[in-house]
Length: 132
Image (cartoon, rainbow, N blue to C red; front, side):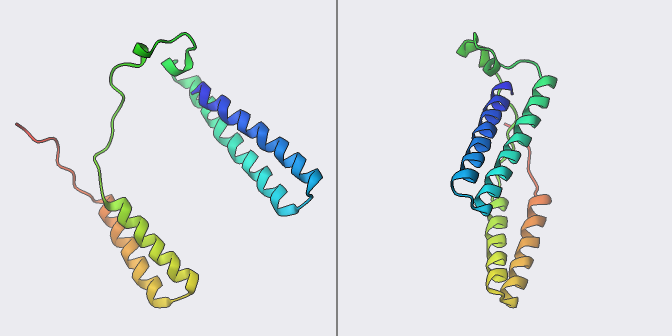
């Protein structure tokens, strides 16, 4: 995680320099504010990765002398696939369009679909691996 934290700290430095340059060159308030907020958000992520990297043992990605074979083995756990997130995104987009155009019928249908999709996602049933 040290590489990731260093990457976000470099990005933070870039956005600080960009905000300072934009402040003196353009002087536009909205752009300067957006650049400062972007620098702050990337600093938050970089700081989080720095704290997490202190609690974890060193990964092969963090060792400059590591070989490719050092990263071999089990990668981790991946959850089973689901179509509910796609339905949830479509329902949320439909509801957002209803809010954008201020159509009450569209908002009601969209929020109903969002609730159905959230319920389907939360209470989704997964069978274990098939026994052969």
